[in-house]
Image 1 (cartoon, rainbow, N blue to C red):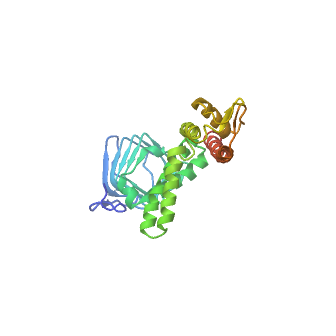
Image 2 (tube, one colour; image 1 turned 90 degrees about the vertical axis):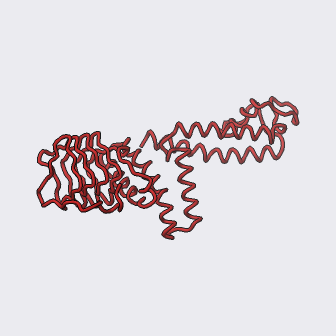
Image 3 (cartoon, rainbow, N blue to C red; image 1 turned 60 degrees about the horizontal axis):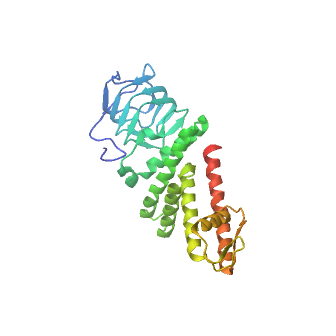
Length: 287
């Protein structure tokens, strides 16, 4: 891994303009700085080539297809990609800072960063995935957009610690933003995991059923039964789901003032929760 995330290790060779190293299948290109400006192999296709400790910074790569290539410890600072495709390529611990993407095919999951980037250079991930979001929106690549958006939101959370160290935010603001981001990811997958949210909904509804069974189980009447008789857990579940789904009580209804007030509060909270559930479904399937 690079000693300095924004500089190549050692003393790499600087290629003259227009010169290209051997890039036949199986070749390894290492310790090289490509000059700024247009960068395009003679054939426009690069297959099974390993790039290690190579700088593509301030270059313009266009109309190139990379197939089964590996990029490790490379610099892409201010690099512009246009009409470029990456098929089966792995990009590991490369500094992709302030890059520009236009009509680029690259799956976000193929890019890997070590934990050191999250701590020292979270802005690299933010810059990369923000550029990806613009590119995938232009190309209508919805699956890749979803993957990039999830990663972009994660890296925004990593950036919170950096902002706190730089005193760009207060501890209260930083902790609240971190908690909101973490909760959003774990419960809804940043709005892209409706199944996960449905499981959390069932868990929450059954938890509220247990609370109602304990707190107001003797203040709910079933089929007109006399108040004071403790209902069964099944009746508590039926009552709770009726309230939380805003369907009404039917044969089960609250009797005491405490039970009525608690039911109203639960119904109001449920409206917001189910609204979020609807938003998750729309974001995932109707984008």
